[in-house]
Length: 151
Image (cartoon, rainbow, N blue to C red; front, side):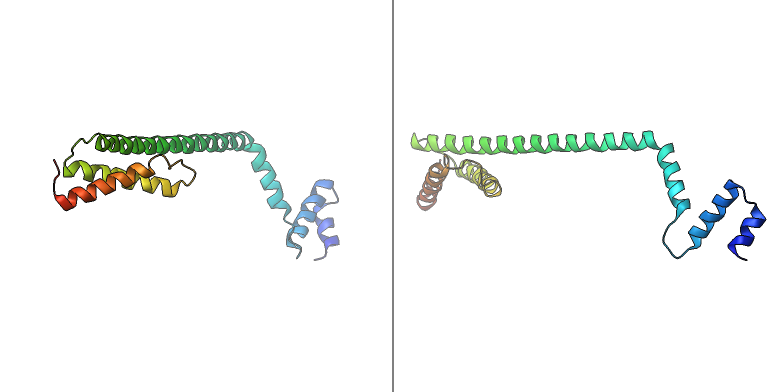
């Protein structure tokens, strides 16, 4: 059956001709799919509000994620400040010749480990204020270990 015969069977009306042409285009080796394009356009028109809402939700989610990441960064930095404060305080106690138990040293050495881990992961964090305090704590701990004269 030729295209001319199909047009004659359906009628030469504009609507019938359009259906026939779309069917022929659908079957043509060229990858043009008018039915899919029409269905996609109808789907977009029907779901326009949902698509807009989804875009708004994605935008809001991205903003929330950014705020959460900033909060986590600030919280981690605050914890590192707390570690450094504990280290400096313990070192000040040592400089004032205050005696400590072995457990006190083990505790502050664990804080030092956490502080070093944070500093390694965050090279821009100002670390120079605790360097000498850490060295002094470790030196005094080694001396106490050799002499076994903890409190």
